[in-house]
Image (tube, rainbow, N blue to C red; front, side, top):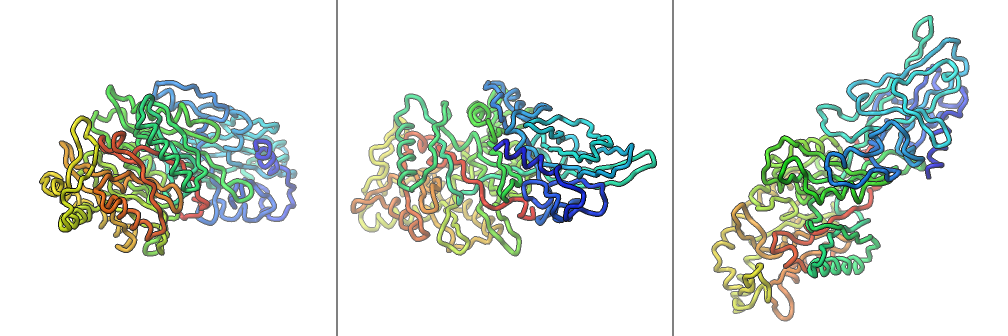
Length: 581
């Protein structure tokens, strides 16, 4: 692949002056304006609109922050780990690194007058965030700190590559747009100038309608519950027909959803495809003593980072220590694509809760990406505070192509009351299970008589109503597209948590398969009433359910299936540069 990429880059300097598409002015700087993945001298579209950038045209480049030679060492120092990547130096890091550079070229001008020289000017503030290389051939490139060219080079033409030194972190510092100007001069004065505009690829997260490429789950050493969980997840994947890899995450932090978030960035590649660098965000969870981050998040550097895979961390080291659960990645999800009132979100939108309580530098970084503008809902009433505790999105047989699963404490209560009315109030819930050392098993009647559970559930219902109203207003989703998922809540010192296993907290394994926690509800005629309800509700939108045991490993610690897994999904076919964002 590296050899092919080099040919693509080098071939741009092999065209003659009289090729079709050449503009009359011989002073000609080109980028991949028509987004073909290479510079095409014989295409007029390569010059058309090159000084503008929109959904139809404009060149793209990447933040070259992967590790193509796997030279970055593993370690435990958070700042040192994040500092190593291919953009951290001024050399080409192996032949594959060439593929991560976006092409630029100065068209050959054989008739350039004696003494003519040229230079490239990069506008501010973008110039501080990029690096130019001269492509030398034979898988070689040379850093150009002050790119200037003599007469012989102008006559031959020059091939260049550009990289971003980092992803966007703060739109107030730089918005990712870069203007590059070619200025050609002689002793008699300026002979001409030409400019192109490029844009740094944003980083985009995956929505749950995309196929799973890798399923992640922590393998806790010596834990039979962890082994059972992974076994059931793997079985559900096979039953769903998934060919995704189940990757066992090492370490002792089994909240696999929370310490990293898979994402990607991309630019055009030959064949109208995308060249992708996978990106793994590290959560901004801090741990005493500051400024050290949650250690499990080092996986984005120590395990994931490599060729075409990057790790990213962003946090405010001056931020006072506090309960930062809102920075966990179970509180960073993605609403699937939709259009409302003529406004389209082809890659969906980021979906987060109560971010006023989260790290604001991380928030700025996410918002700076622009193509998936975040939607925020209140979650501070929850003890854990994550959006995945009350809302999930699944592919569905609906006009919009997806549905929203929503926690519904009122439905859970009414289902139990119905069974009491039928004389089944003595039937057991949570049979044979424990809250750590205390017996969890109870009856329907006892649950309905538990004032704490009933009060917390009523409060949760009102709070969820408010979340739904925001989502309806922002996405246009309607009641027929909302699937109610029953479970009750209870209260702890810092908010509400799920009393029953929160079956909304599941993972989409395929277009037709959803994995949810086993609810351990009352069994009527051989069937758990909450399992039956979920199966019927999801069957109506074209899904089947795989139940996973989470009680000991996650539920008793305020989590479920989604909390214990993470998914790297297939990069969507939608080219972000065509979205108009």
